[in-house]
Every structure is written in C-alpha cells, then in structure tokens.
Length: 237
Image (cartoon, rainbow, N blue to C red; front, top):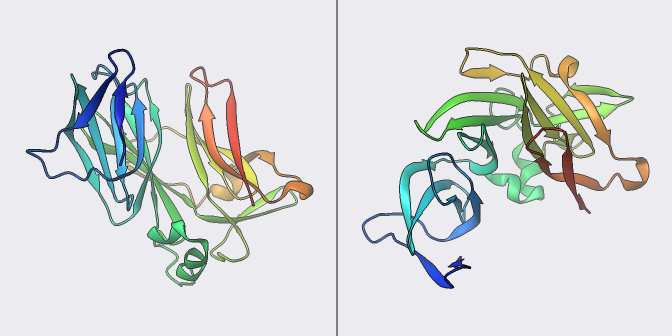
C-alpha cells in the first residue's frame, strides 16, 4: 500500500473510498500538475495494471474522480501533454511482465492484433475521452541503419519505451531494445492512425547502443518542457 504525506503540515493523507468502489492497491502512483486541479492530481494504476484512476486532493482526503479506465491490457502512463490537458497511455499485453511468457504469447499468425502492434492513446483529461490512438510496431529489426517491421518476436527488437514531443507538429519517440528513434506524425482528423504501414520509411534512429553495450535497453524517456533535451534511462541485463 502507498502512504501519502503533506510535507508542510506533516499530516498523512487518506484515500477516501467509503462511498466508492475503487481499488487502493496500486502498482504505480504518480503526481502530475493537471490543468484545473490544485494541488497536483494523483494518477494510479492497480496491482494488475489493468485499472487507471485519477484522484484529487481535498484537505487530508484523496478523492477519486470520474476519470477511470479499466481494460484487459496493461495500462502504462507515459506522460502529460499540453501543460496537463492530455494524458498519454500505452496499452501493453498482459504477458509483457514476464519475458518468457511474452515470447510464447506472440507465436501467432494474427498479425492484425495487438500481439504485433502497440496502441498508444492520447486522452483529453477534461472530457475524459480518447482523442487519438496510434498503432506502432511492437517488433522491428534494425541492421545496417535500416529498420524493418517483423512479426518474429524471438529474433527482433521489442518496443520498451514511448514518449512524445509537441512543437509545431507532434513527434513520437520510440525506444526499441537497442535503438531509439523518432516518428513525425502528420496532422490528421482521423481518430485512429496506423503508423505501421509507413514505419520503415518514417522511423528516424537518433541513438543506438554499440556492440559492447548491446544489453543496455532504453527503459524510460523524459523530455524537457521546451522539447530541447531528452533523457533516457537504460536497463542493463
């Protein structure tokens, strides 16, 4: 269980679920500055990562809001966009938590399912609706500075990190097992955008692990507010 404290008043804050049916065993808890919420809003995902919940702080109480998502996939919080107006969510397969199960799961011929594609969604926090969803390859091969989309889970690189940069246009940062790259997303009125079909020609690598540190996997991406700097944490096996 998580315990939340007010550093200034030294008071403990309590999750108020007396009149609500909400899960309070969280796998992850993060504070975010969200427009319209003072102080910061709390976003949690449940132990099974299939429930996402927004909470607001009122005095010493943490109250659930109406913003809630339940899904059969793991819900991974990527970042906030537009100064806290939008939330980026990455839907992951349940088997992703265990690498061995993960590899077994993807031995399938259903290339149109999320088994071979990842779904990234941008949610409007005010209206609480998915404004756009993007499909990107889960598996790629990268050799001789050339990227190819593949369905072969055992002999490929797997998507492990996602982030966005919004300037005049929207860019998606994708981290695969040993290569980090950027996709420019053209303005579109479509709610569902398939980035798989033109991925091989549009994915631009910006960082690749050398042969000596091929076991370093880009695990987390942070973008500065002015979109000038990018920080990557690596998971070393």
